[in-house]
Length: 87
Image (tube, rainbow, N blue to C red; front, side):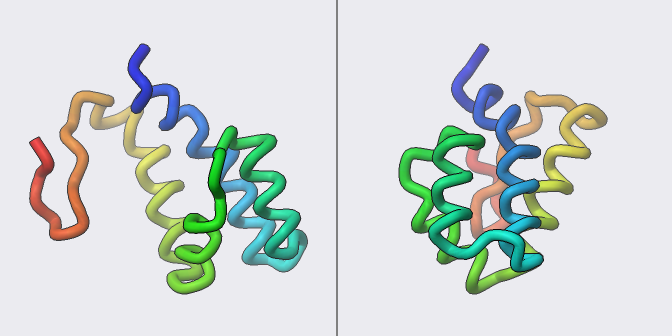
């Protein structure tokens, strides 16, 4: 199994933590600890800063991708920030 596939398996736990953070159930520090412990994220600071800036967009992207993967398959190339395939 590739690193990318393993990372994708952590998308739903990561989304659950972000959802709890955005709902106010976790503060910044607690969300960081949860990302480290539950989503195996070594450095959650950048993720939480992204969530702070883009709020629900980050959650929608993560959940949308996790829900579409079983339909479109894992071999679809990722899209970079400019919308151009990275392949």
